[in-house]
Every structure is written in C-alpha cells, then in structure tokens.
Amino acid sequence: MLNTLNHQMETEEMEECQERHHHQLAYLKNKMPTQQEMETVAELFKVFGDPTRLKLLAALLGQEMCVCDLSDLLGISQSAVSHQLRLLRASRLVKNRREGKSVFYSLDDDHVATILAQGMEHVRHQ
Amino acid sequence: MLNTLNHQMETEEMEECQERHHHQLAYLKNKMPTQQEMETVAELFKVFGDPTRLKLLAALLGQEMCVCDLSDLLGISQSAVSHQLRLLRASRLVKNRREGKSVFYSLDDDHVATILAQGMEHVRHQ
DNA sequence: CAAACATATGAACAGTTATTCATATGTTTG
DNA sequence: CAAACATATGAATAACTGTTCATATGTTTG
Image (cartoon, rainbow over all chains, first blue to last red; front, side, top):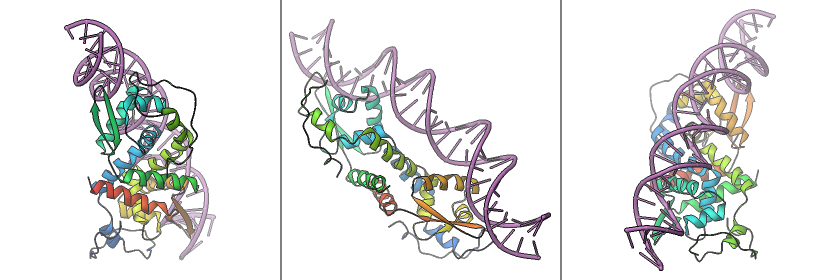
C-alpha cells in the first residue's frame, strides 16, 4: 500500500512542535510519497472532481458512445463535451475511435469503475 | 455497481444525432445517476484533487497526527494545513480530537485508503 | 466539389480555489 | 493572569477551471 515505500531510518534531527509528540517525523518523511507523485495523483483525482466528467464516465461504463449521443444523453453542449473528453483522454481514462463522421469514446482504464464506485460508496454512507 | 439503478424503459422519443446509433438513449437516461448525485461525488473527488490534501491524507494513513507535526512533516505553513484540514473534515475524511494545546487528526473513512491506492495504481500503470 | 453533419479547438469570461498574512480563539504553565 | 504555544479563521490575491461562442477540421453524400 501507500506506506511501504521506504523503511530506512534517518539520523538527522528536524524542527518540530515545541511539545514533542511520539511520532518519528524523520522516519515518516522517508515513507511519504514524493511531491511529484502526489501531484500526478492529484491531477488524476482532479479529473474526477467535476460532475460533467463524472457523468461522461458513468455513461461510458456500459458501452462506447459517440460525442453527439453523449451530448444528447447528458444535455450538455457538444463543445463542452468535446472539451471534457479531451481532458479525459489526456488522463488516459477514455480512448476513442473514429467511425465515419462519428467518434466513439470508451473507457480506457480498469480503475475507473472502482474509483467511481468507491466515491459513490463514501457519499452514500454520509 | 453504477448502472444497476433503474431498469425501466422510457417510451417518449428524444433528440439525437442525425445518424442514429444503436444506443437506446432513453433507456440510458434512466440508468444515469442524477445530477445531484454526481455533484456530491464530484465534491468528494475534488477534495482528493490537491497535492497538499493528498499528502495530509497519506500522512494520516498510519497514525493520527497533530497539526504542527503535519505542518513540519509536509513543509507547509500551519495556516495552510489548518485550512485544508477544515475541508477534509467537512468531507468527513478526517476527524479530530483535542489533547491539551494540540489537536490530533486521523482518518475518518474506510474508503480513503482504497481510493488513494486506486489513484496511485492508475498513475503507476501510466 | 458543395453542402450537411460530426467533432475539435482557441479565446474570453465568470466563478472557484489555495495560499499568505494578520489576527482571533483556545490551552497550559509559571 | 500574563506569556507562550497550538490551532483556527477571515480577507485578499493570484492562479486555475468550465462553459460559451465562433470557427476550424474532418467525413460523407449527392
């Protein structure tokens, strides 16, 4: 999981609260994911953090769909849909294929369904 | 999962692309989560969509921590930490308890670890 | 090839957000 | 109770984001 990355103990001391707590901050600092990692993951979750994009992903859970059907289904302008699909594509959450005039989008990641489900779970359990 | 919500078939027709596709949009519209639902879930993911908050959550994966230790550990101002913890509290992702001058924060949701893990998984597999 | 359709994209604008700074609130200790 | 420490919070600001509008690109069909 997340905290099995780095188990070495650092020797140097570091600034802390006046009143010492029982934590070994230096040790924890080693275990923490890097800034770079966190930024990348945050970028991903940011993509999930918009109702329009969530609806797009939810719509694609069962089957592929073309842009205009997505636009109709969600009641959102074609332009807005296109812009958001671009973002989803950049995050490798959806892929697309052209068929004549239409472009069909589908999910491109196994984790999408899991992440969505966890989100809905949390919300349902208050 | 997400698309086992509503299985009734709607009779009315609706606007679509000129060139019809094989999807039954009316049927899908019934299955789609509501706008309200999507907004709530999006709110949750938005919280995960910031590196600082992710680091806070990651830091709390193993143990509870007080604000000043979090501030030291992440190298972020006490004020910034406090503001973000407030948000995390509002989303019921962390809880806190006071012990003397210090306030200790800990995770308040079983899904946090799972969601984080899924996010890291996605990122690692490109 | 012209017209219609489907999608993509750039610019602009309004709304949101994360940090900082200053300061307030809460707690312990001498 | 005064001083020091720990945390919280309001206001302000800079940066970011999602939509719209206009228009461009790509594709089919007559």
